[in-house]
Length: 259
Image (cartoon, rainbow, N blue to C red):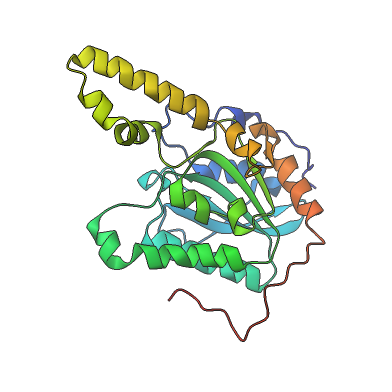
């Protein structure tokens, strides 16, 4: 039996210092699962999100994880549908769900808008919101905007939500936020060097406030900030604590899916 308190030192170094640099989330999954085994589902469809099964201390768990290695891990129409169907399957058969989050947002563009990204994104939100199985979430790096909401956040009845110290929980990334918030103020500065310096100052201020998980934890959106190498132990303990969970949705003939 794989010990539940096995430490995985490689996880402390797996997140690159550069927030725009990718890594393979499957390395994280294999590191924390029993005997490093992971059964992936629908591998070649919407590879920007990973779905599959693993065991934690012998218990079967469904895993949904953003994949920064493909399209930076954004949620698009196909990824939303793939994850939503997987979450509903797990809930139908009482399989607990572990969600690993590193999502910069929903994919922008006219093709996504015409294809109905709002409707399809709502399917994932609905699936997580209606699921009554134990739900544990670990935010690895980016968790921005509406995409953070639909990835099993506390606002969608997530039971236990952890974050690594590298987690950034905000409306958007620092660069984009500063361009929106201080666009007029920066445009008034004529000297490019001074403008750049001001931009960096605002960016650092935004990073210190939002590019860490502690602000979200102070509002109760994160239960604990955990050391990456200890993730396996904390996830198993969380599922053990939730093993007697009883959650019932309001009585109705059937739910009204966002079709």
